[in-house]
Length: 239
Image (cartoon, rainbow, N blue to C red):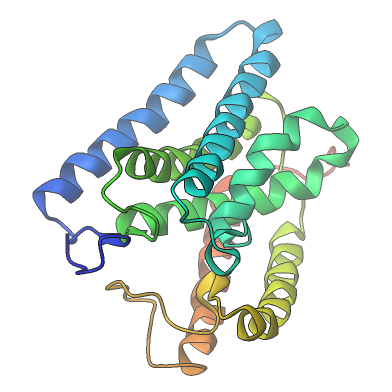
């Protein structure tokens, strides 16, 4: 633990705790994908709904426990961090009509994978407070926002569209311009667009607003990389 505030918890990169935790997260991701891959086709959508139900359960318990402990604050707990938005998409994407899922899937594929990997490699637990549940749910959530979109792509036929990378970049910038004044109003720092996150992160260069310009470049590169890796061979059959 590298933060004197017990409500926050950071794990030193390449420490023993970091190595064990990351290994467990990677094992969970592969287990989720392996089990889903082995299921018969008729059960693959049910399995996705089961994973979504787990996410809903963790979401409800997390916020209920924060209320019970008197730790829930509007400046910290609204689900508008990038990974929280991805987690919410995991919760409900399987329970809406299939023709309404495409952009949500694309946003989740880019932001869930990129944000999840980033959070796991440089974890910052704002609500730790010495409670193991918050530690477990943090890493479970971030493992799932990586595994879930990959599962949807590999098993339920969901694909990236040709300009999905561009749409996601535009939406992220819209979020940023909305959140900067909202953070100023609430005294919050959602999506870390007002103050850099308090972790050692090579993508955080300089102070506000300089690091945001670098983020624009880094995020664009990462989204394009994910697009190249995850795009289908052809786009003709994508609706």
